Length: 107
Image (cartoon, rainbow, N blue to C red; front, side, top):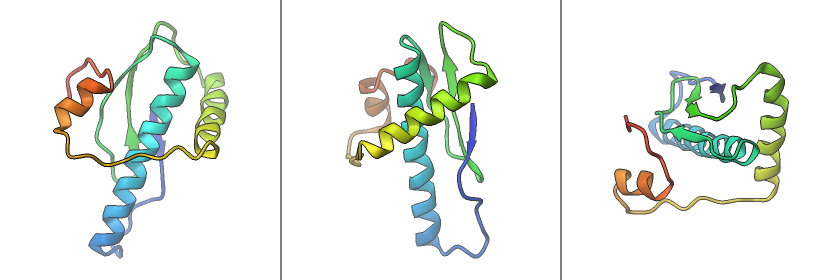
């Protein structure tokens, strides 16, 4: 599943680019949470952010179809409206992944 969040620009300074990468990273987590809420038992494979958004692989007991996207989007919005917040921690990346239940190869 691919999502596009604000196109990168060569005019961004390093601080702006870092903020954009963090926004994309957070959006990826929100989408994974929304998908896992809609489809219990779905596992998400961590993927890096891209130049145009983010990418996730999902292993789900059901196949996603285009008609699922509005439901996923609505759940994304609901999670944002709930004013969830994420805290950056000093845990090692792999320990974080384990704690979040990611069971696939981590790139």
